[in-house]
Image (tube, rainbow, N blue to C red; front, side):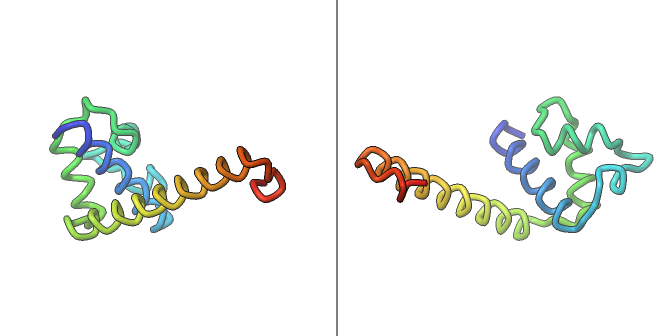
Length: 100
């Protein structure tokens, strides 16, 4: 897995876990520890691929669900960036009240 894939998977895993109201310890078992799950979510690159696939399977995250989560995250980031640009433009044009 490349760094970009690792980051995307970490984002998806964390979002799905939190949406389902699960703690790290809820997913930990004899095959994967809470620390390893945390490392996956934080995109630590030294986690073995088999552990990542095990966690994805355990959460029943398939390609479609992962893609949907990433699409939602990209939209959130895109909207946030647009809002920040608008605030910046308002601030630079002397409309501090509107920017706030």
